[in-house]
Length: 83
Length: 554
Image 1: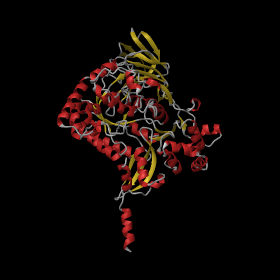
Image 2 (image 1 turned 180 degrees about the vertical axis):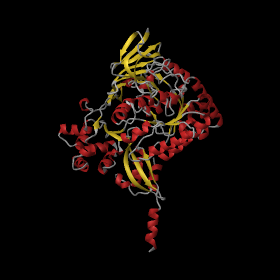
Image 3 (image 1 turned 30 degrees about the horizontal axis):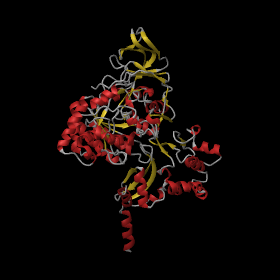
Image 4 (image 1 turned 30 degrees about the vertical axis):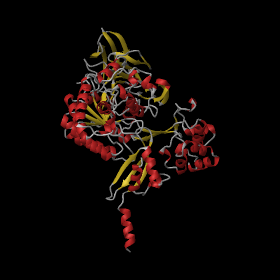
């Protein structure tokens, strides 16, 4: 009985991508706009430039925007550190 | 007898007061009188049915280089803009030691996208200090200029190669203070800095290595003159931007300086971001700080070609996979009939009409001129293809060098943006005139203000709109004797049709040094532009007038 509960806690205790969109960047490039739901329930937005956006998609193994939904912020961070 | 009389128009004087019928007389570059029956003049402009207003002031441009061979900052002037503020985002052409020119050119090329010839063939680089740059500029100005000095170049002068490596030592900060003081004495309108920009190799520009003590010390020098601090905050993150607003407020209060930041965009994706920033700005104004957010009027478009990967395709896995490959493999895939069939199928049962049909072929590249400005849907129909198929085939025929634009994909909700622009705490600006020239047109924002937010949306009156881009801008930047149609003020005047003023369609021209390409927009409804009493633009053409000046400061 305890294992599933622990798993559930792990899943809900991690910041995840809740929404991914394409946004128009200041310089006319398509950028990656992410909504992150944090552990405390707060949702924050961040917009990533093309290089960073591609890197994040690679880090998350996402073939498209849908592939980012539900992925952990830790994976996003890997992409950010690889830029 | 006056030099010039603008007769029979409705005067919108820039103060926000209701328009009134009056003539405007000019003598020796200054407004001599505003009223009725003013008498004779050597030259008369019939302004019947038109508005006569102060020339517009654009507070965020990158015309630094262009002004050296094009003193009108074309096409800014034909839109009614009579004064520009270049030197934004930490970059200016002075002070700069001759040995550092190549370094600065790399940064400028990144932002302005100008061809290398713009820096080598179009002017003689004779100066190192700010006074020398000012003197070089003054030789051929048709428009007025209130130049900022860039924090990155100040660092480069003092720290050399360490400028983009580390924080400054106290002795270096002191040297930067002395240098900034010298620039302000030579006429700089303030200091610009950036927490975002990168050079041509994607390395942070030098200003990003400054710690707060350095910014505080430089702001203290700005305080000696009451001059502006302009910054580019981390605008991709609303929380960091709000932290910067607080930082600017502290500097404003401590040193008694005006500050401004740009850009502020409204976003459907993050609808609370801009309102939260503006709410914090209001709080800081209530404390007595001056923190002016600059907001542009025009919507943002996405542009791309198949030459480089674009996140525009991030909803389409097969397109993403194909277009992210190296060029040879990408070309091979786009020439493979089966692969193309899959791509077209993935674009939807409508052949990509919904996704690609409204894309506009831009021109200025390998696209045949007759197709420029057409939608991909229209091109596809003429070719007997689906939009998805036409996107691939047209690109392939031209070596992939065909750019498309997805219009109005950001900062596009007039109903939301209008009230923000009308706010007394929002500074209309951030045009970026003269920057990103090969990506999109940074001209016509003033025309769009009138066509979209005055006439179409009614978000503000004509008088309010004029005030925001004339006297209000002059007051914020402490530009002396400009921005109001008032006796004794500089005769910077625009005559326009209030029912027609707008911006023309974006199109490509090849008028940069070395036949470099850029996107521009012409003006609509602007009849005459007068700079310091001289007619600089009339009836659709530039004149030979070179009456522009470096703006005097209050």
